[in-house]
Length: 302
Image 1 (cartoon, rainbow, N blue to C red):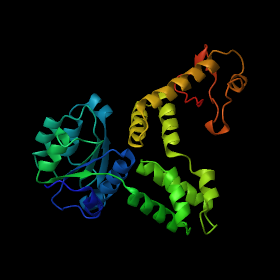
Image 2 (cartoon, helix red, strand yellow):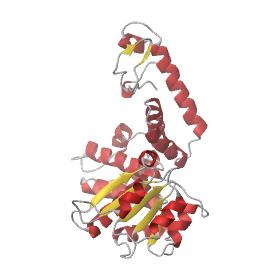
Image 3 (cartoon, rainbow, N blue to C red):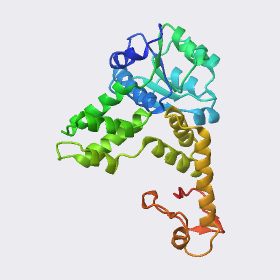
Image 4 (cartoon, rainbow, N blue to C red):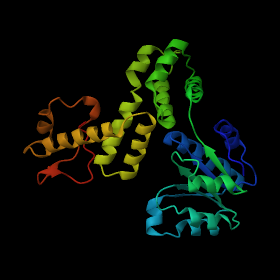
């Protein structure tokens, strides 16, 4: 199947080629890729039947069972007419094995999510060449962001003038899903007012790069490797240098160590931090035992 241009992707999502049974969704904007993969999953599931089963897989599943994808695509579900298998591409997704699998006909559909892929990527070339597959590049632009703003505010019955919209756009980042979340939060905040103002935006819409950096730090320090890598990819898409992310993480652990090394009441230890902990960062919600932060806690000390 011919590779699709980025401008043709929205049209494909609404009406996929009936012969297409495997789709690669890729691009630098992890949020946009995920959002479009989710939309495509819904479309293909409806095409498969009202009772279609949706399966999510990633590297953790393949680490436990290398043949898991093969099993899911080649078997029929017990209580559904067919499956839509949605896979997050990682190091354990083997392209030659995937090619052999897709060479065999299957009633189940496959959707693979990936990051930004070079033209010579084996995964991208596979989906571009297979006759019953498609490769969908996802690159957000200002028109996409404007459409998100218009749709979310219109649904809430809110208007916005051009100058205020420009300011809102400047507060949003390169991650499509994160931007949609921020606009939805703004719509909820301003609901009933009739119009969004500059003050509304300043009050509730955070700087996207700062939010992604904060999310990366908390995910990494909480042992959530998959989430941390996703946020790091979002930072890269927004133009944030990875060295800056590592520096922020180092500062975070330094402050955690300052709190963990103090004896006595946890709240008192937090109050000794300089600069003081901002209220928006929350508090350390779990006690410190044995001189260190308890495993599994997400200590929020930026």
